Image 1 (spheres, one colour):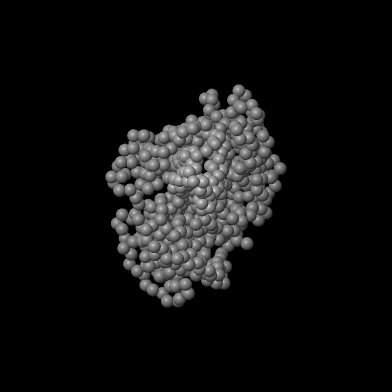
Image 2 (cartoon, one colour):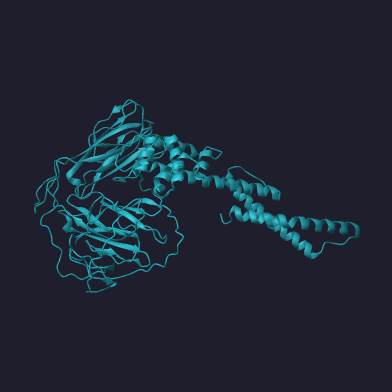
Length: 596
């Protein structure tokens, strides 16, 4: 609609200001016409005509707006038009509040324990959040649920829970105590203990989080573009450079160490570290060393002739169960419930550990939705918080290695029981009978006709990059995504990287230069470089690959640095950032590619 209710309301206000004066003049003109036969002036007639046209336009627009209310209206006066506009404004405001409340509940449902997949104190939280989500999202409701208003106004226990999880380290003591009392009373003391120990976080959600804007001004970003070459991984000292390389070396600088911090080693023990603002790409004649042989899978020795598929394939099957929530199972384990009348509402499957060249896909027939598209490995088929049963499903394998394996699956169905074993993309379940699936069992075996295949490294490597951002907390990003913030003046305080899905024989390591600490040691995949709760900026970092498969890949990374902007890409253990300049890294971007 071209015209919104706010614009129409302004038109109604304008007409309301003009009609009393116009009415008085018309009344006087009517008296003169009746007593003396004097006709109304031309200007008065023109004003009356213009008023009539404007009133008709406003009325037609009110009729159009009124259609959104689902009830017919026929405004005949300015007050009638105003009533329609205010009703539309109320409906729109309620819709916005409802959506904001649902978004908050989505974040509550995204809270997970860092170390336990199934953390019991979180289950009643998820159940209550799911139930409230359904209630607020009820399309038949005529009034806005009061809990929706409380959520948006941050007066609800769920709001207190989110504030503690997302902003706990930045709260003052009195605010923390107040929120802790609310959460403890609503969800239990054990949940508060987990929050206070930093055990709870939010998984990545579809919407990109809005980062708070810092009060300080930020200089315009400058984009640097330099040619990229792949350097040899080396522990030799780096030259001092300010965009242009220099050969001048400087002595080590003493590092002031916080006594509470135990990470004190340098990346290369005993090797001097030189001052660097940005490390440029360099031409290297000597190639990186290669490791002979192919992927080592399940303990097999490398073979130039190829390798046989593993005898068994590990799976991780997540089942989202009515009134229970998420539960994780292994291959050939029954994923769901029996004899409890609980519907399976969603599932996702991962090959674990990953097998290069092999992935799994699946679809589901969902109550009120029908068949979903085929879903890729690690994504949810079905829904959380929608109370919709899965009535059937199918699973298939994909990728260059798919021909060497077969996938099998069965289901336990309401009023039917266990189905026969189904395989390789065939449908398992019912359609149009309103019968719930209560559990599934899935397993993958090598095909009897499997052919030895020479494995190739994946062309791209998936990464999960966790960034701990000032005033925001933990956020998770993927390969080649900006992990951090831009234009907000917020420092990156820590990061950790995982190869996801894992690639046998390949791991990633990284180090960071931290304010007041200096260079950390090289840190293994999945551990945090930097700190939570110390308010210390990261000023630079380096990343390298490790393991028998490392020579088949290159790791690249860039940084967005205060007052500098984007650095050029560097690779394979080169330092990226500054030392001794007190300049914060605000975001980083990391990706891994297979060598040609």
